[in-house]
Length: 79
Image (tube, rainbow, N blue to C red; front, side, top):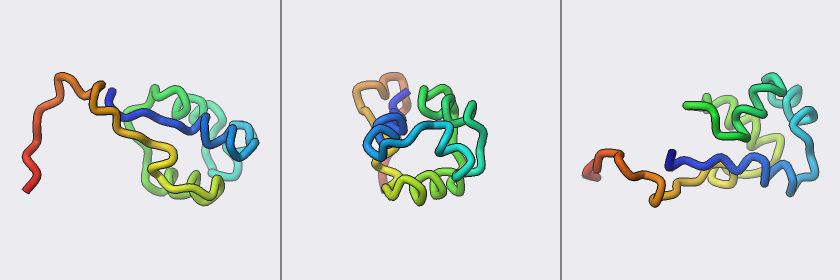
């Protein structure tokens, strides 16, 4: 998957644990864990916004695109 989740990095920078983040964001600790591991297919924008608000960061601090992992994805022309 070409999208990499760096939530664990942001948690470490903020010296926060998943179990502390979960109630502040309003999702379960298990869902935070799944998100950290990259085992999710998507994340709601409102959830991402709450994570960013709590961690005082931008979505790009949590999500990254890694082109080398995008093999097999169709090329989409940008108009």
